[in-house]
Length: 119
Length: 118
Image 1 (cartoon, rainbow over the protein chains, first blue to last red):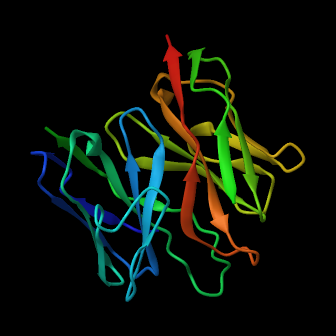
Image 2 (cartoon, rainbow over the protein chains, first blue to last red; image 1 turned 90 degrees about the vertical axis):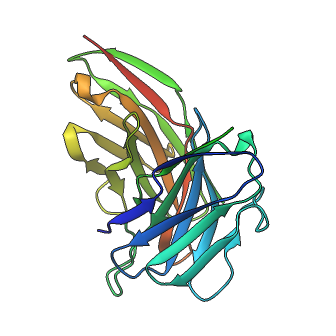
C-alpha cells in the first residue's frame, strides 16, 4: 500500500491568483497522477507526472494552466494558475505502487484531496 | 481506449434490502476493474478489485462484484444494505497495455449515489 499526504486540504483563493498543491508519498513510485473532481462530478485525470521528464497532459488540460513538478520519486506538485471560479474543485493526487516481478496490477491510492474554492 | 458507464446516477434502497450498482466497461485489453467508495467530505476508499483472477470478487463491508466478460459488466452487490453504506460509488477501469501492465492511470465512471432509508 501507499500513504499519500496532500496539502493544503482546502483553500479559498482570489481569482487571478495561483495555488500550488503538494503531494508526498511514503514510498518511491514511478508515476503520480493528478485528478480533478468538479462539484457533483466524477474524477477526471489531469496529467501523469513522471520523474525526470515533463508531465503528460490529458485532452483539455494544458501545462500553462496546470504546471506540474516531479523532482523525485516521492513528491509532486500541481499548480492551478490564474484561477477562476470554474477551477473550484477537489484536486487529488494518486499513485499505484508497482512491485517488480509480481505482475503490476495493483490498485491506485489517493490522497485526501485539496478542496479549492475560487472567489 | 477504455471507458466506464455507470447505469444509474442514483440508487435508493431500504436498510436491510439488497444493493445493486451497475457498471459496464469497454477496454482494448484485458482490464483491471475497481470499485471505489467516497463518503461525504472523505477520501476515496477501495472496495474491491478485479485483476484477472477469480471473476467473483469479494471486498470490504460485505460488498462483492462479478466480472462478466461476455456482458462487459462489473456490477457491485451487497445482500443487505446498512445505513453506513450511503455514499457515492465509482466504477473504475485501469489502463492496461497489451502485456497487462497497469501503472495506475484510471478512468472513472460518473458515479452512483447510494441512499439508504431506515
